[in-house]
Length: 130
Image 1 (tube, rainbow, N blue to C red):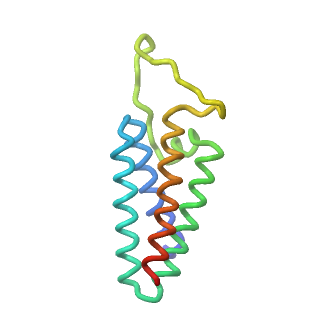
Image 2: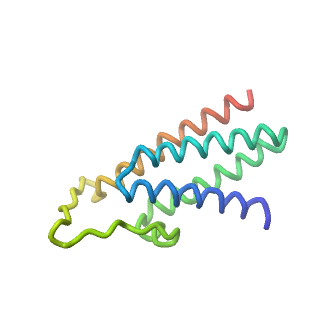
């Protein structure tokens, strides 16, 4: 397996864990999952020395691709990654609140968390290699 495929698998595993926590109603654990992934990739990049910067670029490329996939069709990405939605009975199923853009509160939480994490990633990369 080549490096790009390994990076893709790492990113997808992280997104699967993140989306699973969010689907279960734990946005905070989802955020924690992302923070741990950030720490893991930063530590790995430091160990790689000069190759770390290139490796981080591949990771960020894969993160951008999966974020675009989520933006286009979040339900399809969840299905592809095997993230199941919690089952609710029809009588107790709450009405979904939709915002102007048509996204649910869960989707809004995911997008907000991921955007914040992307900026944190960019800043940590700059700190890592200055």
